[in-house]
Amino acid sequence: MSGKLSRETLVPLLAAHVLEHGLNHASLRPLAKAAGTSDRMLIYHFGSKDGLVAALLEYLAEMFAAALDTAFPAGRVASRRDCIEQVLAITAQPAFQPFFRLWWDIVAGCAAGNRAYLDAAGAIMDLLLGWIEAHLPADDPDPAAAARLVLTQIEGAQMLQAVGRGDIPQAGLSALQS
Image (tube, rainbow, N blue to C red; front, side, top):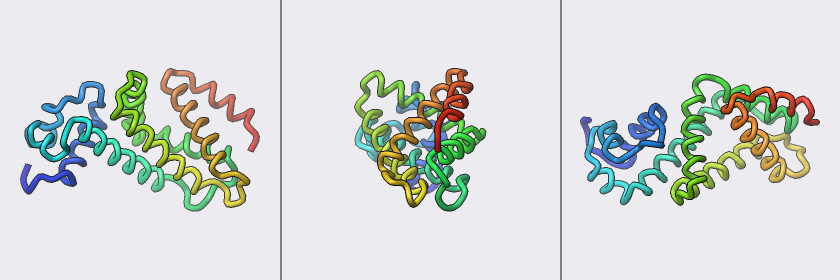
């Protein structure tokens, strides 16, 4: 790699590698190789592997939110259900699939008690809650609670889709009132 290495130049290279290969087997050497540097330089720039993972996941969450913003129609949705349906339709597009494969790596790390993944997942959920709240109808009586409901529905639907049961959230959406 040419040019001066910094956190800012390394993170996009590492993100591209992780989106392609996932986090499950992301050790420092393959990450360093993908970024054109050494594992020692990664530690120098990020302090530890956990610091690297935290910076990487923060960057990827921002990438996901930006991609969602780009694909999402401008303005607010008509209803909570409309928000769920639109997000599910958008995130079903092939461009979003690497993010969801990565998300399931993060969820598995959280289930195993990995503190770096738990912290990153919490920050990602907070980012998504804010994003959803900003897109809900302006007259929603309780946008904070609504964002939590919508996020729960989206996450559940994504998980069911991942395990081959996309029919369940579709049926659930049919039963959900606006």
